Amino acid sequence: MQKHLKIYALLALLSTTGCKKFLEQPPDNRAVLNTPEQVSRLLATAYPGASYVVFAELSSDNVTDRGGGSTDNEFLDPFTFADVRSDQQDSPEFYWDACYTAIAAANEALQVCEKAPNPSAYMAQKGEALLCRAYAHFMLVTFFSEIYDPATAATKAGIPYVTEPEKEVVKQYDRKTVAYVYEMIEKDLLAGLPLIDEKTYSVPRYHFNKAAANAFAARFYLFKKDYAKVVQHANAVFSDGTVVDKLRPWNSRYLQLTAQEMMVTYAKATEAANLLLCETASWYARGIRSSRYGLSRNLFSYYFNFNVVGADWSFLNQAYLGSGGTTSVFFPKVSEYFVRQSVNAEIGSGYVMVPLFTTEEVLFNRAEANAYLNNTASALQDLNAYSSTRFDNYNPGADALTIPKIKNYYGNVSDRDGIILTVLDFKQAEFMQEGMRWFDILRYRIPVVHETIDGKTYRLTANDPRRLFQIPQSAGESGVPQNPR
Image 1 (cartoon, rainbow, N blue to C red):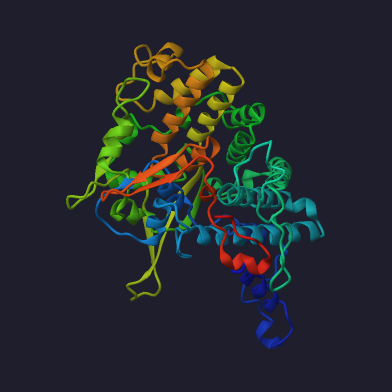
Image 2: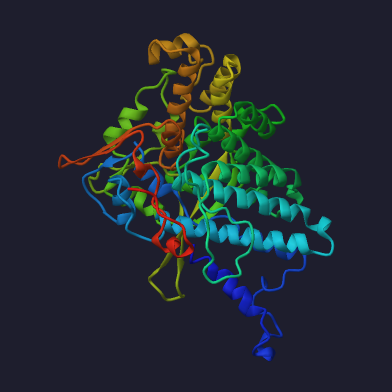
């Protein structure tokens, strides 16, 4: 938790009286925050500026050894289920730091909102700050702690839940428990959601708008296994009753796009499916094709040649093979924005826009929750709405998803379990190369096996401690112990 302290060291420096003439004009507009608009600008930094996609995707069953390509530690180590030997872009440590940096910005904004002479004018900013703080902590506890289980959450170590700006150089923190972290997340989430006011945003999809906040709530309650609340918040996302028009048009408009057009389109704020977008420092747009470890042609065929519906995935039309004889397959979902260190520099940083919440995820969460609530008809209705946008030449009669069709595909399973298996398979296909599969692997303790072309096998069992990414050693200075190995 060391790197994000620099923010407050800077703020403290800018507020001192030394070198008075120099400081008469604040060089950083965050040094004086006395209007709602200034707090809003600060909140633009309250979203994690790092991507979890690489280490989540490379730990999942979506990848294999493609036989050739780069072997950067950010890709190699998650593939072998080893602690990642990097603190750079796309590493768990980089993501940890980015989350606590976002939390620091949210806490600073909240302090300004609470101390303002007219707090009522800052309600929208307070709402966004609370949602940002809750989200960053939720992602941290998901990646670095045991998955939530009502039977064990009160005994499993969580992550530090930080609720105030840091004033000490090295402040000490307690991990407390997963149950405590979830309680704090829920408290912030429920307090912040009613305060969200989209009129304060120039581009709502870059902030916690109402739909994104409810999508976050639906995910949170799915992890918490409170299925009635999952449905409640998912319904708020589809409040007008329409679903299909809010999903990505894979079997219509997307079919007409070139790979380059698709990469630009996928993470645009104008796409109805994108509820919340975040710019992240990442090299994934390159690694998705050039890394030795990733989606191969054989694995692609295994996942996409067959499905419970019995029709052809429209995804097949937008899958591209790597060049130079490699076996890599990639979907054109990611476009890199490269920022040079200077005008004439050849080096710099890559940035990727990541959809943090989408309507597809909300629909899947509602279908899964309804399965657990025995609302079979509602779950099937959502899955058929999804299918209507994902299969070539979709025919609502021949291609309709039914319980007999599910049982024929998955075997003698209950209606509930058959729907859940369908949801998990649909999600794996939908979010291929987006890191989302890791969340389901965690929730259902799905084992993962990675094999290399030279015969090595790496196994991640259902209760393997390596399912928890390692907490950075630097956090030990603040009293945060690492995860067991």
